[in-house]
Length: 294
Image 1 (cartoon, one colour):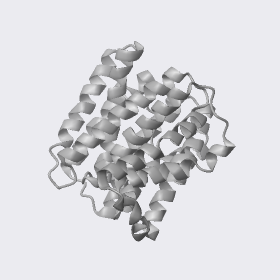
Image 2 (cartoon, rainbow, N blue to C red):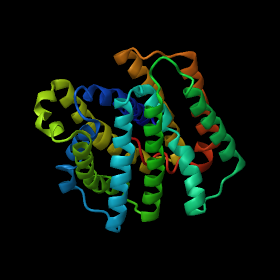
Image 3 (tube, rainbow, N blue to C red):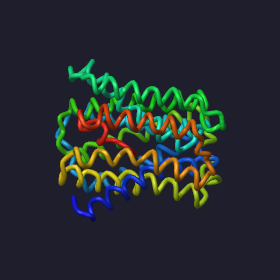
């Protein structure tokens, strides 16, 4: 990799990490499901008219759209809305690699080696350590939602593997077409018609920035550059950059929302990142890890 590509990878990790704080900015008076639905609506339209549909069965697109759009980002946004800090949400979402490891073993007959188990146990130790945080940035509801999002991400990774698509960006974009409607429906069920009738009352410049950032910066630009990196360089060189995402997320939350970086958070972060680094990324080459993130 040359210096330009290194810089691009770091920029994308910063965009993805800051995305969690941008989500929180958008939740000022906005329902989480509605906010997420708007994100995917803008990401899909009009881009989908310029990208060829991937040659896969439509059920894979529907399944991925639901697990990725509703399961991952609907639940992630709800977790932040429930009080989980952006930094901790980004960190705990990384446990999707652990869940993906064991789901891959159970559903795809992938081999699990000692390094996998050791790394997973260390990462889960970091998850347990996060529950000791008492500064108000971690709560049971938020953790439950983000773990549901992590499991959903693992399932979406299995779906994209089973589809055997080579056009990952095209697959992701077309799958996102099936995310907005369920998200809007869930918003209506949870909040009622007021989520839509008062929409323009809450559509401030900050909320609009949040939606645009998530749709174009995080999703379209981020995926476009990331897929270029995956095609141009060995995955073993590119994948470790994703460990920068929770670091940027925690720093961004600290700057924007004065999130306290306590000893418990540093311990939790270190264990999760170290566990992923030594136990999973080198062996699996992060095949399920690199196809996601925002």
